[in-house]
Length: 251
Ligand SMILES: [Zn+2]
Image 1: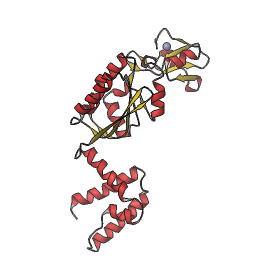
Image 2 (image 1 turned 45 degrees about the vertical axis):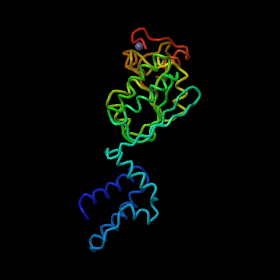
Image 3 (image 1 turned 90 degrees about the vertical axis):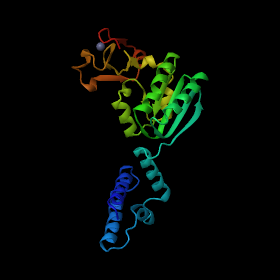
């Protein structure tokens, strides 16, 4: 077996374990079978085939994982964009890889939605396997535009890698990201200003017994232990608790 092929097989094992699709023991056993074949100079079965034969995984799952790897490595540039509507929120479902080859395409989708009057957009990233800075830039313009019209562009279902990319590009300071679609839709009930302070997403906090609420980094909050604090997801939630904004940190 060539070196490259062997590496691919080992990587498949690593990926299925990381994804929780197989237990490490199953993969180790499959690798041992493969090694045994190589040692006795028989043709080595593929790791995927062994896992299928031993009913650890089905073919479909393996094909999906291999396809996903191609997207991550950039050997495939597939991006499917699907649109749904939920109340007055447009759900943009992204599946595949979002990079410079698909940036224009997505930009046109956002343009059309804006022209149709949608200012509330939720991007479903649960099947987005890869995004780079070009992909991210296709959102940036529409975030401002949506907010200027009283709406927002919010995101949900990001996997750890795509979330890491958004963090690294400094996006997480001014876009809202959620786990589920429901959470995302609910967050549209409040204007984005209720979550933002001086251009960045704020974290609002108060002392349990205090009449004031603050930004988390306010000097007034520093000496306080966490168990003596209450946290609020928005300024409105903080005001609704009967508290006033601190005059020093001006949340
Ligand atoms: Zn303060």
